[in-house]
Length: 324
Image 1 (cartoon, rainbow, N blue to C red):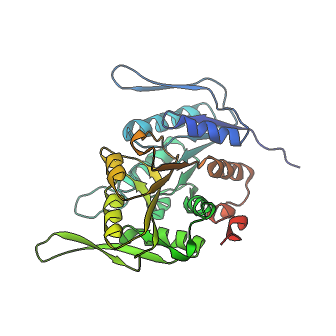
Image 2 (cartoon, one colour):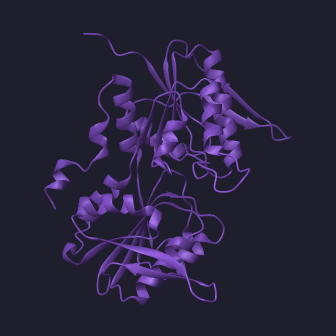
Image 3 (cartoon, helix red, strand yellow):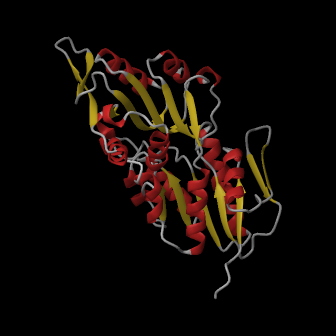
């Protein structure tokens, strides 16, 4: 039997609580390193233990402050490369700049590709992400990329919640989210509806629903809750259409300025998110439910390290399938 090769896990500053949970799931201590900023904003990193010959996993989400998080990660990769780490595996629960994945008007950059190039050039061996904004971002890399999905986590949560599946509808809050909504609907074995938008003769935008939501329990799903506008506006449209109860779930609770207030004032009964980024939302204490993605990401790290298939992580567990 070939002995397991040595592994070390490090966390940068973006989401240390999640990194600690992942390390605990793997029964591994977090590696020792310091990340600090000089008075002029320069980032300095010092790895305080040997990494020579180790397979290293670096956990870092790249949410606000986005550019600081990215630079921390790039500097850490360079430090590990110069310290002779055997492989450098970047674990990104949230991939900042993923929304800039194409040009929509002349002279626009494709920043998701730029930062992918930066990771590869710095020396990353592999990337593990969670719910990329668009899955084609994987193709921007010339190294292996594993993109996990949060839909199975949400499916398990809603099945365990014992909602009335006979009167449940999964709603795409915009037409670009149909694929994600269909995945959740398939797990729950319920129909979907779509909120789409058009303009009237005055040029004003209005929303309308494709599907039946009257007297239904509705679950909106999206990958990012950033400004909260998509969910708050969608919930108003559903409420006006006669929805009985309105739930929402999102992989990444970015919560830019004003988002928490919009969700708090909306008809949404409950917002379910993961801990892919640090969540601080006392305004939503009565509405917010946080699921941990630590077990999912830890299992993915274990499978990467032991060269075992990742495919079982992409679907609902059999025990929960039997609940349907």
